[in-house]
Length: 150
Image (cartoon, rainbow, N blue to C red; front, top):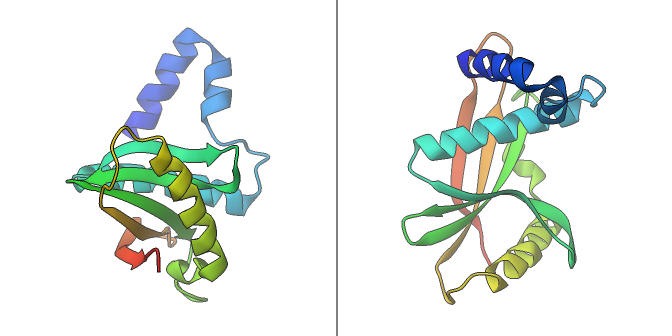
């Protein structure tokens, strides 16, 4: 919250259009705003836990979809799919990453890997579930190696 207040103060001095571009729109559907909030929280969670983030919301012109977060943990590149929920009552967030979604993520990962200046780096596909339940702090569950190439 302190960071957001500081950010808003800086933007107020520099111009309000930057704030409109950076903050989620009030016209954004609630589920999309929740997803954006979760991806921001996931970014900071991973950084606090030693990951080096190299891309957020990465897209390719050659495939549909996006990679929520691309990060390095030591020598391993991690493609992290973030799933955000406001309750655990229905189904776990990670259950939303079905076989079709996994194929999309693997296709995007291949395109991303082709851009790297090195080859044959260890690759891992992770799912990070973020829960924003009413009256509680955000909770995170990281599933390292949730699925793979095969």
